[in-house]
Length: 336
View 1 (cartoon, rainbow, N blue to C red):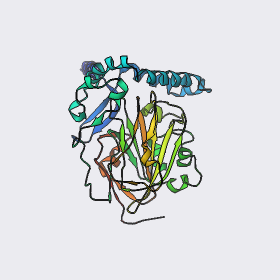
View 2 (view 1 turned 90 degrees about the horizontal axis):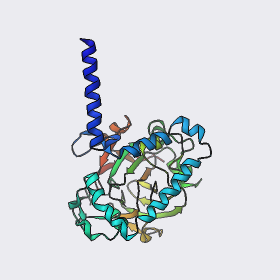
View 3 (view 1 turned 45 degrees about the horizontal axis):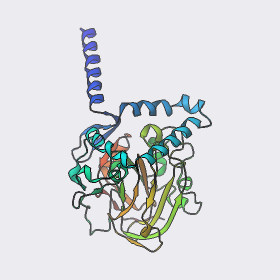
View 4 (view 1 turned 60 degrees about the horizontal axis):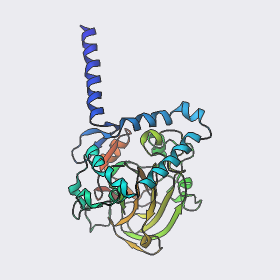
């Protein structure tokens, strides 16, 4: 009886995996915030296998020079260039069908209106499709991108559970020994965008731009398999960042990080100038083709993240979110 039950369990398991592969649900486990349903991120199976082969202890030990990853980086950059050619527009329909993208959320919604895949990739939301949570309340912070988010009350907690790179620190992330310590062990939210996502990003808070910097770098994968390896993904990749000065949250660090096949990480020119005013939900910049990542860091004691995000994050489960959803609220007690 036990043997039959065990064989039945194996059959069910294999069938469930076959169904997930058919639906491309082979990525990391996430929770869809709108429904509370646990699901797997849609991802091509070949990409899943590539990530497993690249980011594991054996490969990290063998490829000490990172030549394999460097080759893939250059290949990804070249692929990104191809997405700007007119012939690339033939890929759009297959991409939309593969990932079940709801084009009613975007403008233009007609895929034939895009002249290149790159144009489609940086498509804009249709007005009203992503309402901003309590837009007139500056004490609330919002989600910055259609993405999967994890959030932790301290950077040290995020390193234990999610970001495993050997040299990850806020100082290494911003390459600034004066700025980094301000966020050294404060609350941090990590947003990860997949190729099928909307690739514009928005301000989490209202305030004034205090600092802007642009940093060249590589374009490695930001999939959880990569982030939870010992490879220093976030501090090696190209990135732009701003510091937003606010009354309610203190200083807020926003870091847009490129990844595989991203041709550009660009914060809009009007927000590259210290003193520029930005409102919660304003479009801050864009990524061009590929997966990408965003780190939003707060000073210690200045934000209380939403409980549903914190709870999932402690179990290394990301929450599937949309631009403008609630992220957290300014903390009442302020610490320095």
